[in-house]
Length: 65
Image (cartoon, rainbow, N blue to C red; front, side, top):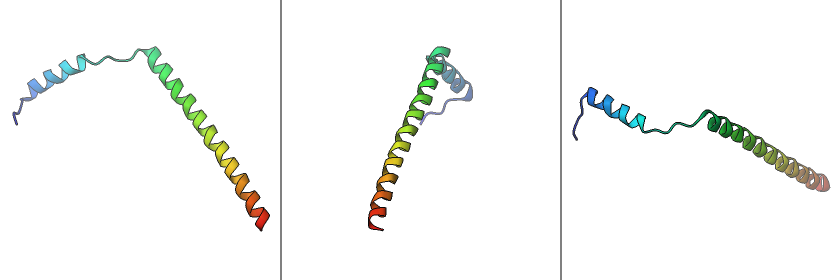
């Protein structure tokens, strides 16, 4: 395996970083808002499922208990 010296390594890293397409501020804000919305929807979904399962179990256990 060929070893590169630290100067060449730094130049290669700088070259690769310059190829990165950074998101705009608007894209970052939009994706952040979408993550919060999806997280809230997921939390609501699982809370609803939990309430339904709890109601079903208490009904079944109340019937036999």
